[in-house]
Figure 1 (spheres, helix red, strand yellow):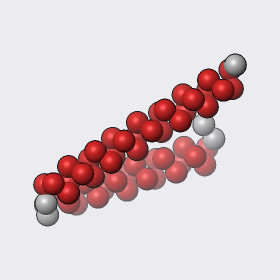
Figure 2: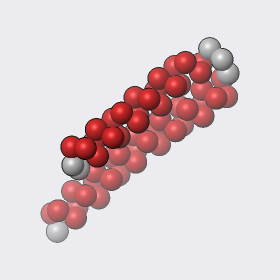
Figure 3: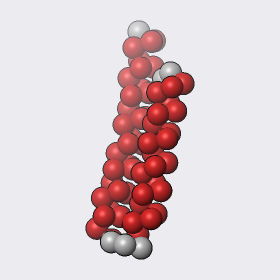
Figure 4: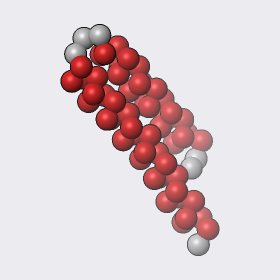
Length: 58
């Protein structure tokens, strides 16, 4: 994965984690939504990284 793309995934994940932390005190459902989005963003980063690595190898 290129460095700018990795930085993008890292920044978006940190923003979603911060939103989860802030929303915990306001509404549990919104916090759960942000948590699911955070896990999805991190997972998609791993998926994109693996696909790009596979394309480079073969």
